[in-house]
Image (tube, rainbow, N blue to C red; front, side, top):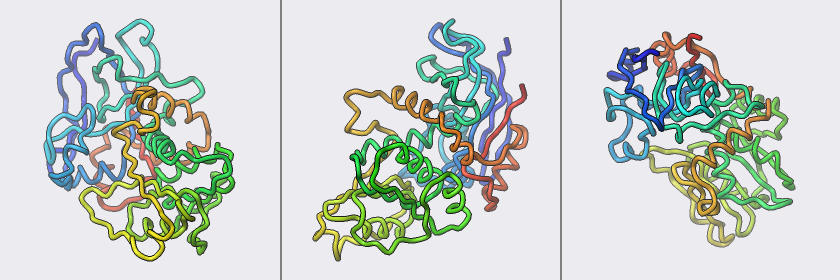
Length: 325
């Protein structure tokens, strides 16, 4: 059994490299995982690659198995799929998901991995993090039968939120996305997607995922009396301007912050983070999610891929890193 691994490290501003390192010996409660795929969380990992993580949000952005501190050197990432090579007998040979950085083999506690359901292809399971975020947002929103729901922002989180909401008996579901390419992808997924909506006070719920002040305020304008906006966006240390005048108070609107670091208050007493992640993986049985996967790159080429991402290349919603068999 190999006692070493190769991992991707951010060593400086826009400078990533593959390093060899020793593996810790797996204890009785650990698993050794051979990675098949890892996913790049484009927005977050680009920020880390550029050394742009603000000090005031560094603790919030820390990944579960991150090694090193921001800005560098740091081993970062949290979307890994692989096969258990050793560990508890019930896990050996199983394909699992783990919140681990880009690395060809790793040792983690067995309790931190989740077995991927047979109905979910391993590469699709890379979207578990995004679907978990969307699931938590829907728990926070708590839509009811017949509700009118608008999703503002059709990127990865917005698209995953819409695909989950599409399973519910809603009165209406529409995604607002001004970018033509993203909008067409949503239409191809079978969703009602528009560039804009001129329908003030028409919706019970709005899920906002554009990470822009304009999107946030557009979502507020869509809400009917006592409507709720669930904020799924991550602004880092940004300070978006929020329109709290005009109809905000008259309509008695609510803004709810949703953050995947904690299980939604509505489910926290009955669901653990592990439960939520397992549910997110099971919800990936819908083949439409495949359209949200990005371009594939070999692990050896990840430094160049991250440079391309930082330079503005469109690599899709969730770029895929593949590892040698």
